[in-house]
View 1: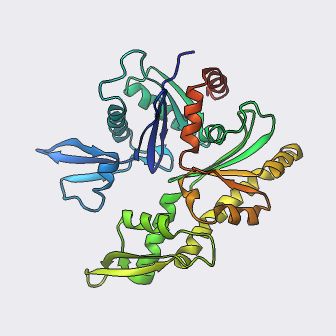
View 2: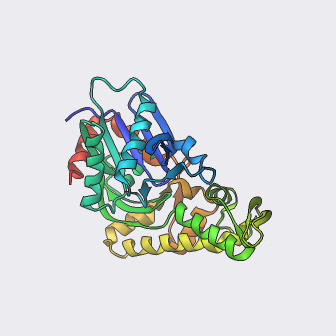
View 3: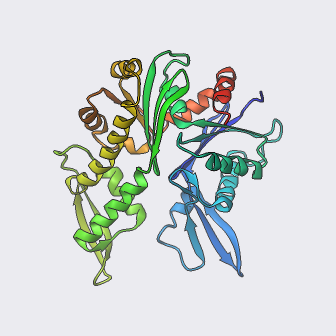
Length: 338
């Protein structure tokens, strides 16, 4: 099998690219800004630069997020965005060997949604494509032994979805992808502020609230001052939001995650349950940075819960490890060739 040289995590919130021999070569928001010039639409910028324009553009510029809930929602914009990202990773092109890419995806993707990824790769002249579930990559990234005969549960809480996998020997025994993630939490926080403070906040401001004071601890006294637009007067207004204000929103999201974990656990054999009871649940993904995730889930599920030291990087580092272990990668590719 061909030597793969890139791993791409095409996420709702962020796109991450790992290059063999280099490490993480790019991590930027999954967004693209399109500008209309003389009735022609052109790419203005992507990633970090595009996200900076959210809420600040004129009528000639639009900012799009082409990946929604872990799925390619706008194929053409996703292609343009990824093309620009690949230019950043290798400005002079890849030459020989050709681009051979591992794409990381949620385990709940349908065959049609996986084919969209393959079509995207083909459109970008990627020679060979392998699709691997994020739970498998996360487990490798968290340095669980590659041929471990024990079963492990991995919960990846991302921007658009939460991916839950029960894995044994790189094989997914049970898995589910649910529409709970950072984007949904942000939307609920924005609605809360609008209803209770009569203030409209920008998307980036809402995300800052979640990342700064989001917590699952009822005694957390964190707070943040933010500025928004008052609905009635249309004037600028500064408000102060406390962690406890958004606690029900955060709890609601993680209650749904816990319910899905419970459902999957109830479908497992006693042998698998014994392993998970022994090793606990591994949690990763950007939203797992919220304070108290481990304690909250552990209390509900009555199991040990471990949040990875660097939860943002678990999945992509696991995929990177696969690029450096082609024998293991080839074996896993055979498992997930559908």
